[in-house]
Length: 350
Image (cartoon, rainbow, N blue to C red; front, side, top):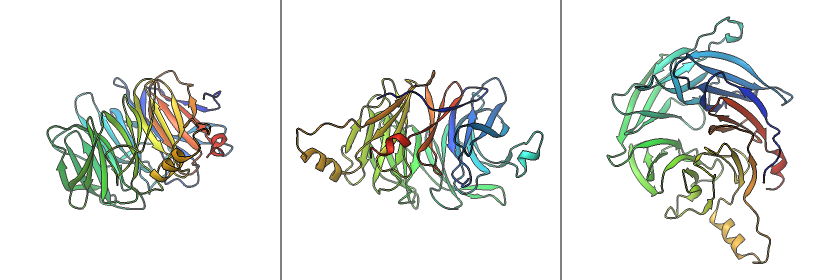
């Protein structure tokens, strides 16, 4: 299904691939987006949705060194965020703070709280503790997973423990389990790997091909969703990890990212290099699927694809739900175009 676009647009000055919901801002629906220009000084935009829900405006604009490859807003402080950035040769990561009175300054500058420096590997992403205020962070590079202690007041970050992915695997990203904060999933080309961060040892792995994104179900334990380049979207129950409990076709080109809705069960977003965002309604448990399969065989088949948003001209790498208004999502295409959409028309179909 494809509907006419009702999205609200906002343009960044340069190419971009990172957007994050500002979860800690409970008064506004806000997003952070970072640019990816090799030749120019890059930017972080603090974007806010108007109270009427009809306009996106720039609440703050900040210079940032180098190309931004990963950006995540701190879940407990709306002025703090992490970035992974590159000058074309090396990759680094840092924790930043937006100045308190940024709206009153002519040229507000980001404050670098601390860098997350390691001696090896190409850093890929930063994971924040999934809920509440906490001093733990995880950084994932191609070779290793690091657990950090962050002290914002002292502006320091120290590695607490680490483990290697192994020579046969190159890590590309990951997610922290919101139901079991001792568990982290990391993606690589041939599998999902899981670590217990208390011991920093691997606990299990799931074989799958070219996984580039993973997200845990916010309400259901043991359930997670993966986006795989060519084989689409897989929903997994970690108690029975040999095969996915459901498969969705994904996109006509690479499926790049997948996000579970923070409130509505089974509502999933995916985006890809085919310049589209898909909205799905999927079964997320064995019981649901079994009941569906045992139903009258003459019953009408229900397409899990609720809608396709195609008002884009470039690959879409950035995708996030709003935690404050969970019927809203923001997407970011490589040409620097942010689009915010509402899925309210499809919620009644749950």
